[in-house]
Length: 417
Image (cartoon, rainbow, N blue to C red; front, side):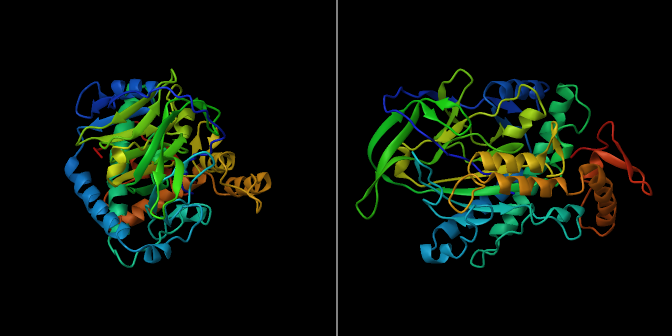
């Protein structure tokens, strides 16, 4: 099930205040001894951080390859791209510009959603069709999906390394945060924000989000379309917090990202070249008390509208059968999707009965306690067949008794990721 970003807004006024001055996201270096403590502090403040000090050669060449493939796809005529718009919820495949506009705002963007696939025979395939849906292959750009999946794998390794360091800082048992991400759903959303002709601009205050927070300082513009019509209150992504575990952002060195701090101030943020942005998503708040999932959005100004913008957002979810605090992750996800308006009846109204059906289906899946020994057994087989290079969940657990399915948590990592 895809991470869905909600811009489900119910009202605003036009008085407006200026958005606070911009700057770079707080930067932490993985190679520095105090890295984890500084990351923890930033997650408690804004919920965002920029990370450096990782192996750039493992990530940035893949990022660049995906950008090339994505730009090739974007250059195709609308009639060709339309055939990849097969999922109205945007969970997989292509979503054209205008398909996600909500109430007050018009969002000027298109996106492609690609997930990291499960290997053949993996025990988590039991979670289909609720989770782990197959990707939509793009015949005209045959490397788009495969390059994106490789990038998702590299970003997962970086996320596990980062969270393991934070576990030590917070004096948590090894794998408390990281282990639940192994083979969770990882979904890359490739964004294209087209350039536009801006004819007016304003700043809105009191924008009420579906999450119950009022947001001030939201910059919007009016845009003249090719047919001569005007779209009002346009931005690139409306105010929202992210549903899931955490999000990795690539492309935020280009201005536009705005974050609401705890004191209500709206701050423009960018990242420096050679860094990657991480942000806390809603469910991670259930695992680490005090970490902050922030309302954020992508603004559109007269200056930034002069050029197309491309970016990537990698949404990391736990395994749907793992727990986010006291909640089963998959059940929590369907409840949140219902809250933000993505589980509706035929009249477009929130459908509580459908939500409950989906949650009951999640609860009927084998729990993590049953699946973990099955996954450990599968990993041993996959290692022998050369399907994986090293243990994945086996980094955090070992099978103590194969006959009974008893497994134990490893006290510490046996090797570097």
